[in-house]
Image 1 (cartoon, helix red, strand yellow):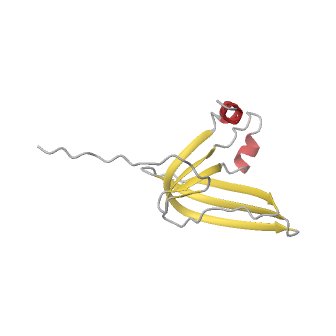
Image 2 (cartoon, rainbow, N blue to C red):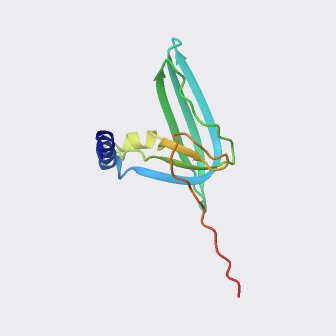
Image 3 (cartoon, rainbow, N blue to C red):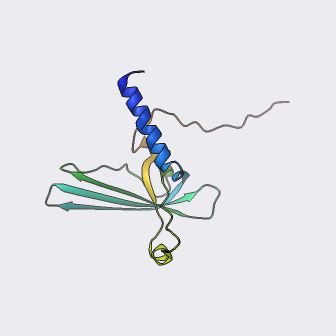
Length: 142
């Protein structure tokens, strides 16, 4: 194992140790998408994307938010439309402490997005090597 691989392994282990209990993944259809971009002095760019996802076989709706701030270059986001099938990977919001119940009611809990995979158009926000294959039920012939 080379130096790069050992450093990547240590970084990933530290990340999992810090955020492992908050990591989550949601698969479902996009109900709504709202994109807002803002530019400050032509050099500082901010993009905020709010996505409402309805998970498969569920009545609930999950709010996901993607925020990126970048100097000089505009941050990019993949094209999504209503009805697209997506997998959203992200972090659950932090749980507030017991004494801070008032702030809990004021905040809307949203999953902060790390990666989005559009299964309809086969596009990823962050490219991944793994291929997702759906399991097909076998038909037994008698």
